[in-house]
Length: 266
Length: 62
Image (cartoon, rainbow over all chains, first blue to last red; front, side, top):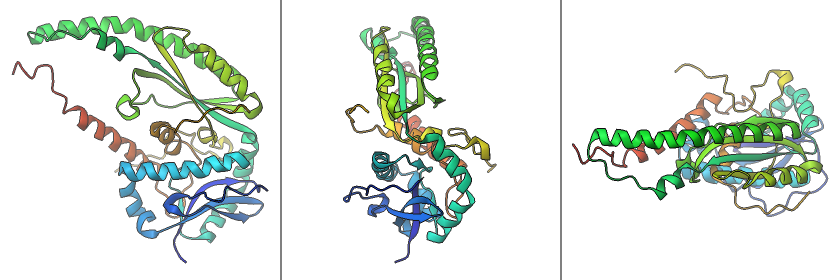
């Protein structure tokens, strides 16, 4: 059976078997490829979908992207139950097992360093939303009689929103500071577009925190306490995640997650 | 660890991590980061194209 190799994560060997009914990307159950004392978690995927050309086209197809992202996450989640996986970027594909082995050898040192750093830790996502839109809905603007009228209405709306912005920024900064002190590491993601997330309000903080499992309960309580602290601010917690946002290895010059440094001209 | 109730993870939260996080490896077929960035840009383009269908407030005046 040929096919390409889709790699989800690299881990240290773990004793507990993965749940039996787990299906990975392209419906292929994840397999464990042991090499040099490390394990790559791999699915066999068809070339017609995962060679560079088709893959590139698929990634722009929201339905395909969704299904693949969910399958990828399903495997990472299952791994998180039995070990601390080092997740790879989505759509990391090799021609065959030996390609995967070569990669593991080349990166062995960095993998070990990062796995040590992440051992026993999980990622928590914290987002803050300023509820601007609900306010707008309460006071539906009268239909502007003219362009000038429209601009006047708009200016008033902007002014009332400015206060809220100030408040939101202060709140988000303070929360991030508090959580960063508590967490071992933190990353700021770009605020989410409301049209994509479907969430109400404006996303003013979208952060990830690396926290040890044993301290996670306290971290969650810390976040929960800030909910409802300031009216108009909504705090959302997601996780625990595998440490996606903390998988870069500074020592080997890896780009820090979320920092696309290898942009090329087109 | 506490048993935290897991709702289905929102796609945006997932993509924040899968497309911007994780170890970046230039495999033999792997897309480059720049390629993956395109995905985000395309999604944003998709949104703005949806938004342009919302009529402008000046529509009635023209």
